[in-house]
Image (cartoon, rainbow, N blue to C red; front, side, top):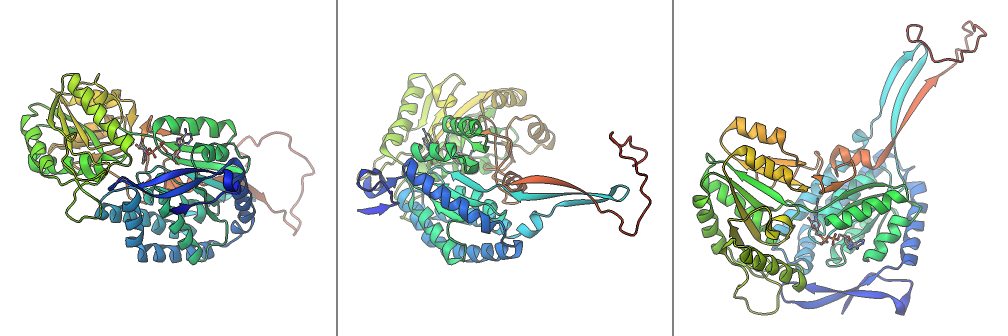
Length: 495
Ligand code: NAD
């Protein structure tokens, strides 16, 4: 059995199974780090920081370029590792790697991104400037659903800024992170500037409590995001904790039926709904029947199967437990009186893979658990309202605020939606409005605890701290000294 990770605790180490979700078979075991393991990695990372922060911007940038080339060359290898442990179809895994590489490309421009500000003569003979300096050891804790892309939201920017970085990936699909560590090493990154710690809650809490960890970037479910935010803050760390989602698509009566239905299929069922930007609630203004029929027809035609099979549109879910949980939500929607228009529970599939078919539930109301909770599976819930105002109120009343989209041909309605909706990322006729690497990614409300969104300029600011400098150089040529020492702030006009 393949073993991932190691522990100084030797025989006493805890382990967790890793599965191929398409077959249900265990393919590896991951050794879960102890508090002592985490401490060892943090100490090494802190030592490496002393010289990495002194490495010039040009040298850092060159290593990033080299890493980008290696990641590019290994796109397919990374995608295959994702599919083997996560289950998503290979094409989707390739897309994940591509989006991650864009963040490396952004970080290659670090010499430009780290430029400070300078003002000459803020007072006579006095200059003011600001610089951004790295924080030290930054930890990243990531979820199972994007084992390559989500970590890439974090470490290229953190490392480019001069920090050292410790990645604690999901224990459910840990292998891609080891490959990333190997690519960094080949790119010439000094030892311990990037480290991987495999583990579970024990490793996460050890990182959160460790006094040498300066900052934590977290992406995962809302309850854990809240925990990470609170515990990290308790030990005075900088924390950004991105949480779960319930993303709404609002469809107005003037939207193009076919292209909207196509977009909803991609956003609802892509990656079997295991995306934080997946659409899971469709809010239809006016008559919903034509749209429900168009989505249902397309959903029934989707092929659910192994991610390695090029004919599959949708792979399995991550675990059997998760598959059963998703089925439970459909059971409860049915018991609550919703219409199960397309039912993924009875999927006819050979073997023990964790498959669940595309599911469309109509006439859902906001009190039903199928609407209230994040399901993280291929389940689209349709809610019917009469006006755009009602639709916006529904979206804004939801505790999550990650992504949302509106489908319409009317610019005024789209503008109103964009302006008034309490959600961090908005699409206008774009179902999954994932920002480009040079913008920043993040939700509002319970989808993000902390102030900073991730990657882009928000990422640079999160990974650095500001220092402001005020400078006066005495005039050695002997300008007259009044001999008087001022004890007060300058009043302004004499500056
Ligand atoms: P999760 O919260 O279970 O796990 C995330 C990380 O936290 C993992 O590394 C895990 O080991 C660790 N963890 C789990 N339980 C813990 C505990 N009790 N204490 C400390 N650490 C713990 O999330 P997941 O199931 O791996 O991923 C799916 C979730 O991630 C969904 O809710 C999804 O919406 C969310 N997500 C959000 C975004 C975003 O950008 N907002 C992106 C991707 C995924």
